[in-house]
Amino acid sequence: MNFDTKLLHGKSVKPYADGATLPPVSQVSAFQFESAEKHAAVFSHKAMGYAYTRVGNPTVSAFEQRINELEGGGGAAACSSGMAAVALSLLNMLSSGDEIIACSGLYGGTIGLFDDFKNFGIRTRFVKELTPETIEPLINEKTRVIYGEVIGNPGLDVMDIQSVAETAHAHGLPLVVDNTTATPYLVNLISLGADIVVHSSSKYINGGGNSISGVIVDSTHFRWDEKRYPALAPFKRYGPMAYLVRIRTDLGENLGCCLAPANAYMNIVGMETMGLRMERICSNAQKLAEALEKLPGISRVCYPGLEEHPCRSIVEKQFRGRGGGILTFRAGSKEKAFRILDALKCVVIASNIGDLRTLAIHPSSTIFIHNTEEQKEAAGVFEDTVRVSVGIENPEDLIEDFTQAVKQADQ
Ligand SMILES: *Cc1c(COP(=O)(O)O)cnc(C)c1O
Image 1 (tube, rainbow, N blue to C red):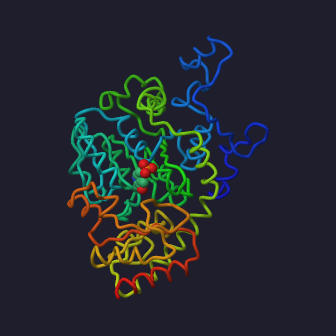
Image 2: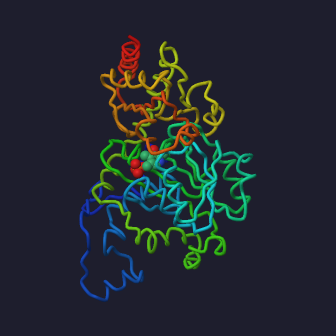
Image 3: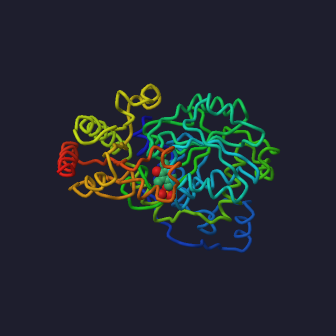
């Protein structure tokens, strides 16, 4: 089954109770039981069932099953936000003293989180780009995971998943990849060797910009060595499911970063149109990037779909040439970047990505405000960088809007 069809007719897209095509929103905190014995059986994991929404909820499970099928995983766990998913995906395997190897072109919140991890004795070694050549020299006896974003936000470097996965596996390390910006529409990361895929499903999965959420998908391919990953040792008897079982019955449950059932429902409704949206978004972004390149008054248009993008060969191989929905350009100065943003008529100034609407932002003064100058530069965020998250409007209107805004900013 192809992607668009799977969104509507996949195995995980069940007819629900009474033949409903979408699951009911089980907007409850707790589930009642007919006997204390059955209640106890669910709590001791001897029987399947839902008892309390922080631990499990049928609407949330329906969302998890759909995203898991799209990513080709062995199971998924939804979270209250993308940041919760990133944090839980790593804390679930790491212990104090461990090291992460990550690329520096990460989402600002994730860079901040890795700073926070220092207080728990978890250190991150950053490389500009994740490649076998950059990773190898940094791997030591403390390294426990390789972490990257398939398309860095907002640096827009594209990672070659297969070669990085091979290097990670050669050293007995799992590869965790944030697939928020590429989405399963552009690439299936698990088939290329990623072990854990995380998403901010607030973005392209939800698609309408109406709910914050995140999700972790486990390939269940990685074999967790109990000595190197002692936090997972008590779950050894679950074999390849150990990582997910720890999230479900221990760390995820105890951190309490559960997804609200109503938001899970909004994600399910939204993701059914993901194929159609991504097709339009990628095509719009390609046209807008090509038009912006010809526009006098701005420079260094960066978009993975452009011929001269440094990762063009990976884009061809990994995404079949499609460049995703994000582009950036340099305005020349912070003041001019602000003037362009203020002059836009239909493009909205907002910090989100993956909305139906085209959104624009000055990252340095907003989403990277808490990062150091060094971190900003390493992430490809300069004083005059403008990031655009392309939506589904008519592409000619978008080109016209940027053209008039740049012209006005120059006056
Ligand atoms: C937005 C985003 C996050 C964080 O997600 P939230 O849902 O806002 O918590 C993480 N990674 C990437 C690449 C993002 O774009």
